[in-house]
Image (cartoon, rainbow, N blue to C red; front, side, top):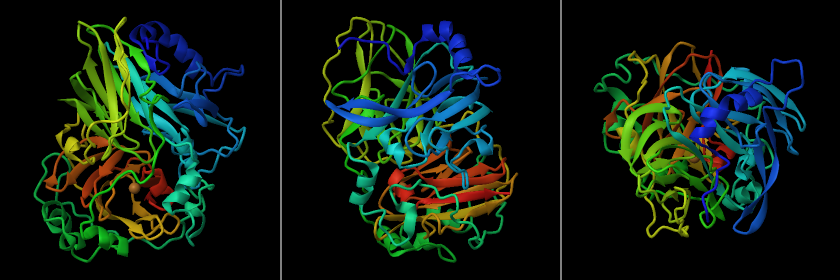
Length: 530
Ligand SMILES: [Cu+2]
């Protein structure tokens, strides 16, 4: 293998010399009278995985590259064309500046019909973000980077890495294997249907909303808490603590089993390959880098049912952002990355050069994927796609070390929600005991600071994602802390996690597990901000 320019990496020279032309051609097309090329075309393509052809989706910009790489200050302006053979629901994951009606993955957002064109125009949110369908097609790689390079990113070579879990089987077959999709509760889990049902869930009963607590100050000084929430963070994680005063909604039989302490498990879907930029580790992408150069890896976990540990091997890394939000640099060489999350790592290539694999290992498993950073002329050795030992389960220990560069301001909490993650027989995943469609939305008002406490008596980790917002992770077992700003948080088994959100936008925002098959079979609700 010899180093070749990467389709997804944007090297420094191209960025400095060619970016204005690329961005003018790619992003400026909306206002003019002449017909501009689509901003993005969602279509299909054929990929070779382990020597076998696979028909997958692709999202392509006018420059022929997957997704979008822009610079801070650019707008997402132009048409997105649905050139697939089915209706499309796109989600701009992490684009907190997108107007409410320019993301179809909202309750009632509808679908872009086959051949349809959606017009968009909004300022891009700086940082490493991504785009994907909010449908089962996400399993077939209907996902791409949506990266906006920050003004202060400095003199680095940006290398975008998109991770995927890949199966030759269809998502419908996978769902059937899992035992989902056939419940009496209708279409929500049905594989062929869009994951979201625009008509679902309206007119449901009001959620009882706990009274405003107002007795603590958000991130600034994690204060001792009183009451149920505090007890759950600091007390022993057994059934008694989980019950809390007043009991918790949604405690189904599955939840009780979880609380008895069933061993954590992961990877309920069996995959044929794990991909980094469309390639498995037996034929990895080799990205040419400079001796002594600084590389910013912008890693996106676009997998549907797999969390990874990213391992930079010989290269010491500094984590500078997660989910597109900047961090005080944190040194390390192994970092957890759940579905939907992003990780920005800066590494420095040694002056003597060489080849440096950047690996992603499946949590609780030996499977590996990744790519290789190599200087000119370096020998790239064959890599094995299986590690010697199984990885650990992902947890929040990494988040607990992150210090946000721009945390939420200290202020009282106006409203607190408890959200019980649950599992019901027949591969149905629930929130507060209900599948999506039978859910009771969380209701809050614009301008409020809310906190949501996730409680997870199930034996699986759930990466919980809130649309349209960045939140701050402010508590888990062991107490409160001023954690990272994120849009997707790991909620480990048998572990409470508290997030704080400032509600600055009206709308009905999906809140769901980013494990595609959990979401498809029910693990989704909405936060109504009025
Ligand atoms: Cu889940």
